[in-house]
Length: 614
Ligand code: FAD
Image (cartoon, rainbow, N blue to C red; front, top):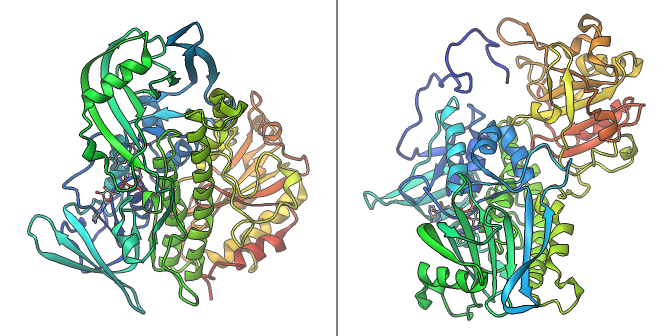
């Protein structure tokens, strides 16, 4: 973390200086740039992202009276932890959460038809998949961390609670949304340039666009309870999938804090016209079902911290915005508003947050005049495809878990372990597009796959010999990262630096406003082949010690060397010829290019960015 650039400031450096304009109003303003409906994980990820831009007006609204306190989702995939790192709270989550290191599988005992036995035990997250663990933490705590990011921002952003979204009207210049103030009963109206509906599975924003969740009408119902219990089941502190002979399945997820555990219990399918509340299910029903499935083990529940019966179908929206022929999008939907599926693979909260992490930087760049409005169509294109894959996966997983595939695939431990990378969120790959390059230079960096997330690796920072993760330089600040891999003595690397710094066709020159710091839009970092003790800082290209801020201070944190204990060049399949790896603001790799491909780099940015200099 870097601070004191524009002068020494005492106190917690994570708290930004407040905007001179003062604190944000508690009432709904009449106008905003971005209006977010819904304070779930999707809405809060977007609000936290927008809070990084003091020049953008953002309003986030929820019908609830205050923040979520407990319940709902709890699985945090490693890819999400990588995103949390960019927001600055991954370490806190790591400290507080339960770590899913191993999973066990239980099946009916062939020797005792009334009982179950353990049939498998596997590693949950393969070594080297990410520097982060797969963790479990109450969704409400995830909300708290985002609210904290918002609160520490220059705008001191906070949600407007107690407002129910009612209607939406789009015209040539923007969108008018109406809300009911649930305290006064009066109507509120707000004009916004863009509206994002993060208002969950029964989204009113989605309905007002005339969009529908399409798919399985055969709703599954899951009982879920967070309990403090005394049990002789031996794997209560391991993630366990249990399939009994006659009584159904349970998924046990140990929870943060060491004592609590979550039980997911599959209930019967609902009829199309039936709602779960009509069945009068209570927590006692869930406890009794858990005891039947766990037999011969017992579960003596002392306290039920939260329970719910959660109804879901596998459903997906055909598009995530209001674009139509010749009309660019102004209203978007994200998260459960556009896709719903079972909680078994722990994807709901993760995919929802990744939706708005994809949208946030694009929306911010359009509002700030960096990108044309048509870039916003890439949000629906990229994220709808991701959700389609998830729905397909979830449908198959449900069949395997229920033992209904009618084949050997019924071994759910095998299915589970072969899909661990998928559930970790690390297999998502965006198709080639104007934002995602092709793979012609992929052989220069086989471990940095174009279209996939940037997979961090250890390095040593040259200036101060600090061992660190290279990926952790990326913050959720809307900037691009251009990593240059090469030898410090390679003339091509020096030529590239000179070109990036000075040439009028360089994207850094063309797209960085005159009065901004040189790394304000494209943050260039170099990773040398040489060890950190073999190089002299003063001999490095001057562009790698950029002068910044009010005092023109040098930024010493742009250059890195391999860590001899874990060499990034070997770990990420980097060719000794070196290369450029261009990473989007949402941590996805846009391009891998040879060091001498200045023209291709220019062409890439020229494909969608708006010049910032005359
Ligand atoms: P949500 O988290 O649903 O957030 C939507 C927000 O929009 C809410 O805060 C809501 O109050 C607000 N909103 C809705 N309508 C309006 C309106 N008209 N005006 C203003 N605000 C509005 N996932 C699991 O993996 N495991 C679980 O056990 C689990 N249990 C769940 C239990 C419940 C009761 C619910 C609702 C969801 C559960 N989920 C569970 C799903 C998981 O929480 C979601 O996948 C995830 O929260 C999706 O995030 P989101 O931001 O898209 O939507």
